[in-house]
Amino acid sequence: MSKTADPRDWPEVMPELRGPWLGQTPPGPEPVEFCPELLATPRRVTGITFSPEGDEAFLCLHTPDSTSGDLVWTRMNDGVWTQPTVAPFNSAQIDNDIVWSPDGGRVVWRSWRALPGNREPEKNLSLWAVDRTPDGWGEPFPVECGGERQSPAYTGITSDGSLYFATKLSEDEFGIARAQRSGRQYTAPEIVLRGPVRIGDACVAPDESFLIATCFGLSQYDGKASLMVSFRGSDDEWTPLRDLGPKINTNLVEYCPTLSAAGERLFFARIDVADKSAPAHTYWLDTGFIESLRKED
Image (spheres, rainbow, N blue to C red):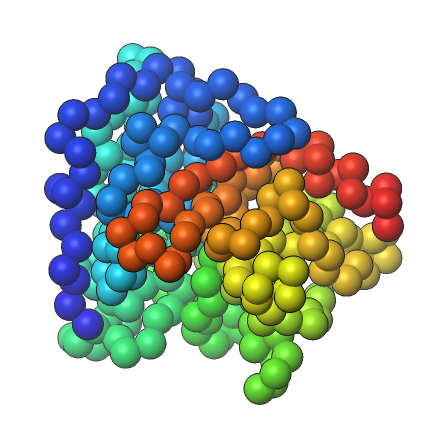
């Protein structure tokens, strides 16, 4: 699977963005489009993840037909954000769905690059990770949970380093799995939640108080991707997934949810998949809205 995308397709003129969070004013409880002058480009940006300080970000950059993908990196330098460049661990194959751990020490993403010992790109994706060292980013390695490689879409990472991700349980049943960090790798995944619909991307609050997943099949949104939430109880039981409602979900596609390191801000992408040339639009909002839904359960 060769790569046709080129991160140099990014607009030649970088807007002057000053201050944390790409210079954007922190949002309230209503979704606000996030930095459209940089993110709403013909090369679709379908996910963003920030360092804990909000002064660095990784983006997933795609061709409109999603046949290629790159990880790009931008940083705040003397208060001004730099032109996005290829991430140091990006490969010649498709790389996407990247998320930063709450402690800033690891990023996890999925890739079709060759696994260790292989020369050719893989036909199936695998999760990969890389740790930050005093000298920069280390060497990427494939993620294993209980000794098995994993291949989900977006993962969620908790404060203690555990991974949450969607998994297929049977031909018509999906769920959310959790794998606890064990040294460099992870324990065997345990199913924490079973979903009534197909589940894709997943993110989780750093304290594991709630998780948000991209789900397919809700009739009120014509079966398109939409976001649902589950809350964790004191007994480690998770509530059934529930619709985040019209504040978030529309008859377009909402997907690629990510959370800030402290869990106080939710980012997600919205796109009109019927228009192949339409850019993806990134939104963000304060997660206090999500916490208010817990009281309604």
